Image 1 (cartoon, helix red, strand yellow):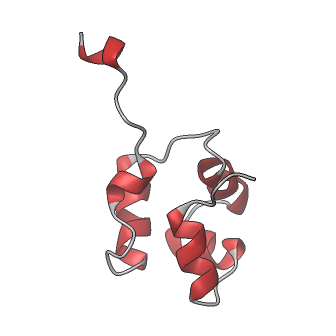
Image 2 (cartoon, one colour):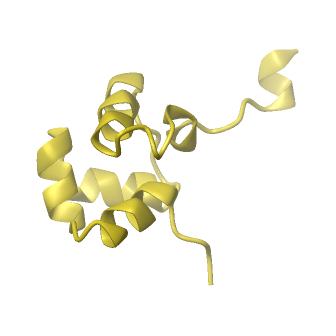
Image 3 (cartoon, one colour):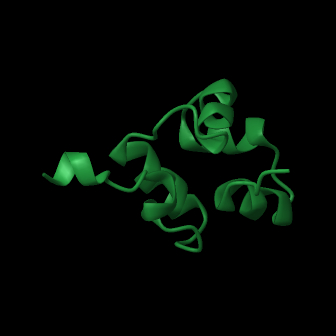
Length: 73
């Protein structure tokens, strides 16, 4: 079993569904599900909105994939 995304855990702890979270972040719930599953990346704007929604509990970095060593070269 894979660990759930920190934002998904925050939403569940605060009684929010993915659909409600998506509405508050102005995106589709399908897009959020893909981000939470690691299939899609969040834009910086969306990462900022989601972090703001959590009151900063979930930092923007939780939505950004680490840079690969190839990308740094």
